[in-house]
Length: 292
Image (cartoon, one colour):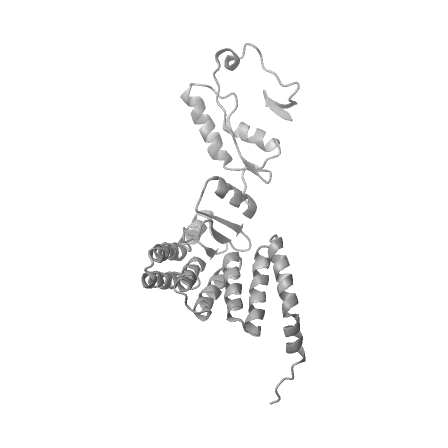
């Protein structure tokens, strides 16, 4: 372990301060704890600002400027500014007990564009699906930020209607829930969370699978990485019981696995399902085709 002391990184065994140091003599001191994800410091500017605020509160003069502190942190092997990847963003959202979070990719050439994926942790925020914004070549960052912000208007409207759908569904006002789902679709045609709310309404009403399936297909159309929707779609097809629907169920479960390749239990289940469907697949392959 290395320790940063008086402008230098030194081994912890040799790191030391004078016995006459003010902090040692009088117990004056401040500290700031930072988190790092995949080797990248998170919200470094805000942490440094809070460090400065704490120092000012006890009239403590920082021996280094905030920029110098930032340089020291960067020299330690951590990037000073960074976007979080999906895994790190999920960890942070859970730590902060957030209802939802957003991850995405930003590109500046040849034209500025951003792809944002809204992730709902507990199924209550109404935020879900993708937002894509494309600017014009040469557009300033400020102008493109306005374009990106405008692209969120529809999804935020749909999220609000979805929350209303969930509230009506919980109160067993199923017709009211359906109405809010339809309003969400007016803002975003294949809004995943609204489609899922609608599917669960049909399930609560014990409607036939043919009522639930279109809503679930709408959900995965809006977000092909929506694992819960793929799972429900597969089970809905399975409940119909026909050979063709069994094949559609297997396809849905396979899409679920593609969205989450780490699910070993699902992988085993799909293998078992395909084994049971092998005779059906052989029948379909050798069945004579009608002549026209």
